[in-house]
Structures are given as C-alpha cells and as structure tokens.
Image 1 (cartoon, rainbow, N blue to C red):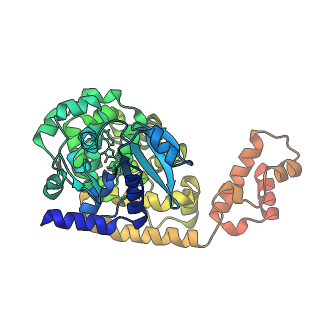
Image 2: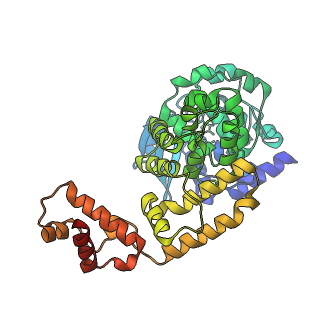
Image 3: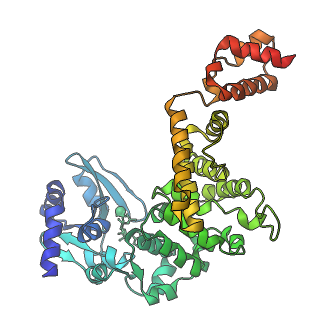
Length: 427
Ligand code: ATP
Ligand code: MG
C-alpha cells in the first residue's frame, strides 16, 4: 500500500517537462533517473529544493546530445544542461549501474532513484528509514565516514533539517579526529543548512557530545569552561528566527566569554562582545563565508550587549542606530530577544520592554532621518573650502563632530547651521 502511494505521490509531483527529459534520454538509449534529495522531500510531503538526475551513460556520450551543456564538474562529474527552459543537473554514471550509484551515496534516505519504467529504486531501505525518521549510512558507518568525513557533518545537517535520529552504530562511528581533513568551505556550506533547521538544538547537542563542534570550531573549547554557557548558546540558537546569519550570530554571540572569563569579579566577562566579534570574524572567514555575511554577523555580535532601554533619549537611540547600521537594528533586537529566552526561558518578562523599544526604533526609522555621515548636508569638500583645510584626518574629525551633533536633533542638518556650529566649536 505504502509502495503504491509513494509511487503515486512522486509521479504526481514531478514537473511534466522533467518526466519528458527522462523519456527523451531513455529513447536515446540512456536510462535516466531522478535521484537524491528531491525524492526524499516528495516522500516526506515537502517541496523539493532542486531536481538532480543520474543517467546510465558516459559524459562523452551525453554531452553530444546537449550542445549547450556546462561541465562536467564537481565531485560527481555533474553536467549542467538546458532542457525546456530549465538548467538541470545530470550526473553521468560512466560505467556503473543506478543501483551501484545509490550504494555510493551517503545515507539510505538519500539513496533513492525513480523513473517511470522502474518505479522507485530503494536498495538500502531508505523508505523504511524515512517512515521511522532514522538517518543511517548506506553500508558500514565507520568505512563511510572514513571515506569522506564530511558525511559526519552532513549527518548533523540532515538531523537538524529533518529532525530525525541517528542510529547507535552511526554515533559509535563518529570520529572527530577525521574532521580536520574536510575542506572548510564544505563545512561552512553544511553549517549554513544545519543552523536554520528545526532540529538544530538536538543536532548541536549531539555535536557537542561527540566533540564534532569543537573540532570544527575549536574556540568552543574555552567556552566549555564557563558553567552553563554552552547550554545558553544552544537555547539562544533555537530561539532566534531561522535565518542562517541570525543563527550564526546566536551560535557565536558569546564565543568571547571563554577567554574573558573573570570568575568572582565584576564584570564577569569584560568586553566579551568585542573579543567575540574578533573571534567570530576569524572563524567565519576560515569557513569561507562571504565577506558581506561575515561583516553582518560580527556586527551583530559586537553590539549584542546594547542597552535595551525604551526610555533612552532620541539622540541616544539615533547614535545607536548610526553605530550599528539601520539595516542591522531589527536583527540586533531579535538577537537580544533570543538571548533573553536562552537565559531565562521566560520571554514574557522581557516582552513588554522589547515591544516598547521596537516601537521607539520604528518611529525613528519611519521618520526617514539621517543616520550615517553620508547623510550630512555638508561633505569634506565643503569643510576644506570653508575652513581652508588641506585633506587629512582633521576633515574626518569635523565630519564626525557634525554627525554626532545632528544625531541629537536631525532638524539641525542644514548646511549653514552645521558650519556655524563647527565655527563655534573651533573657538
Ligand atoms: P537538498 O535537497 O537539501 O539539497 P540533497 O540530498 O540533494 O539535499 P545535496 O548536498 O544536494 O543534498 O547532495 C545531493 C545527493 O548527493 C545527496 O542526496 C546524496 O545522495 C549525494 N551526496 C552528496 N554529498 C555526498 C557525500 N559526501 N557522500 C555521499 N553522497 C553524497
Ligand atoms: Mg541537492
């Protein structure tokens, strides 16, 4: 019954043009199959992210059929071809059969293939594991992890995305000493997918217990010395909105606490947000996140200790917005919201305060006022001309001064008033 239902569900949900592609390749003498993640998603009733195909044929032969192809490239010698207005990934199985190919894949729930002639091909028992919500390597876990240690991190990625459990033998086979051999950008890409997952807290817990997390990010070792800190981080990650950059910020927001820990004294973690931002920059650059993302995440960490006070003056709030960037303010408040839940699990206590603070910020942002130095009604050239200055740091200092002054009261942002003010200040 399940088998019939599964086949129906797959058939009904594969776009007709992709079914055409399978038929087209079949007619040319190359049996083709839909493989991997898209079948997994369909069987779980989710929308597939991408459609991957495998074809029993060599890339030499397949290339001839599709004149405007790209590749083969990547680890699996994948060809990118154009088909009815889409770009499709096609893995050519050179000289192996589809069943042999499935056995080489990482987990049983991914070792699935389908075409209309043969139906669902499932040599490793992937459907059963999907039903039981279990992640199991195809074949011997120890061998599979040794072959490609990235699979250890992929396990936690799928656990977080799907909220599935690992088998006992899978956990027993996890050897964190294999991980330094993994290319950092591959680790970074898997972490990007792991962090927004609904099962992220469980996955992080497993990564801690198996020492996978400290192998990927050794900076967590010092945080483990601070009582309760790692549990707090885990809960904060689970509480923040599931956006990958926010989740990275939550994961690393307290990473500076380990090396600034000052037991028995106040403050307990002096300047941990500054240290943390510096460490996060190192970590994220190492994992090859795009520069703009590293900047965004480290800014959130740098300012996460901001004063959440709805009674602050407009000037103080504008200075804050200008310092962190208007594009980051809402995310910073979101980080604080999660940080509070991660500490107390009692959001209701901080709720009204956060609401009031957000209202204040939204009012200020809504007035479309000036928050950056570039918004000033004067620029460096005006100053050099007016005060007869040479280009140099003095010009920047004056601009800063003017900027701080208009943040107190944006109605001051008028050329003559600013010059008057600076003239007074110079005296
Ligand atoms: P998603 O739909 O989330 O992209 P996916 O299962 O397609 O998930 P990919 O990373 O796109 O994941 O990989 C495509 C397929 O290639 C997987 O389903 C898996 O069968 C196989 N695969 C990918 N990486 C490995 C690996 N390191 N070892 C073995 N098989 C792998
Ligand atoms: Mg995929």
